[in-house]
Length: 159
Image (cartoon, rainbow, N blue to C red; front, side):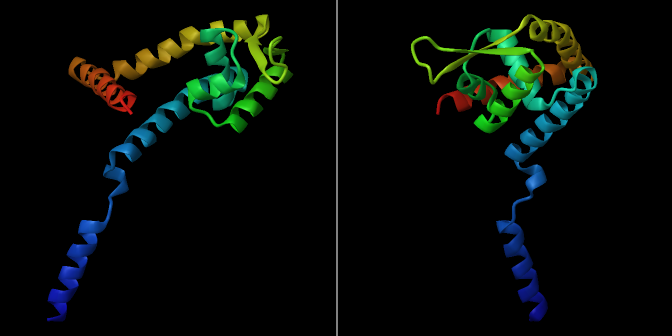
């Protein structure tokens, strides 16, 4: 009788438990973090950049002049991470701040010539890293990844 109760209790617990390692949001986050950490080794070794600094540099390199708020929204970074990254890039003279003439509370951020040089040097490195990741997959796997990402992006763009 006790064995039956224990078996039922274990079955009930299993039914209500969540195997985090099989949960899609966890798996996606874990994989994204692993890939990001691997790429970080490259830009950290070459230029001593942290992830938020790299993302800030890359966002400004892609779009040009932006506010810190816009960088945070685009790169999904918290404002404190963006603020620290901006301060460090400015300290290195890779970024320049200017006040918005229409609203002095707003600062426009832009890469300096030195910052743009670092960005331009890292673009082919980033593209090469991405190609190396894809080269680890066969054609069907590549297509599945691209299709799956596009489907997830569509699903979450509908909010």
